[in-house]
Amino acid sequence: MRRRFVIEAVMVATYGQLLVPSRPVDFVLPYSTIMELYDMKDGPEPVMDDPEDDKHVKGKIQELIGFFEDPFNRKKIERALQMPWRESSPLLLNDTVQFTVVHAVDNAQYGEYFDPIETELLLTSMKLGVPLLSDQFEFQDKLLEAEVPVQVYDIEDYEFAVEQGIEASDFESTRDL
Image (cartoon, rainbow, N blue to C red):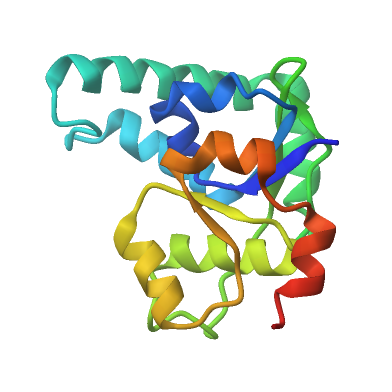
């Protein structure tokens, strides 16, 4: 069974180890995080502090954009964008990694405490009952402070999440506790 995680698209480009999991994974991406890739690729601000790392990550961002712009994948994404909260058909990267794009819709429920991307990530996690993967400590702390009913894994715990992480069905039954 595939492990599912809600994640920002840029994290997939930044952390290469995400693409070589020990078990099959499905990365659930709110569509707005894919659109962020264009800003990061073309923007004047570096994605990484080290110039060589920044160049490498921007190259990976370009590769990921190319993957999503592939006509077959683009058609699946466009279908998902026809209705709020619709999920795309799986976009297969390889035998162990696939992406599902979600037309997430921000709402005011958490809008004052979280930025729009964070809100879409947490709402997607809540709506689908899928754990979040994040590298942002401030975001993780805010989730805890706001008592948002989502499971979140730090990116450093990715392998643990893949190997021993909770199943979606376990998350559904415990998230209201």
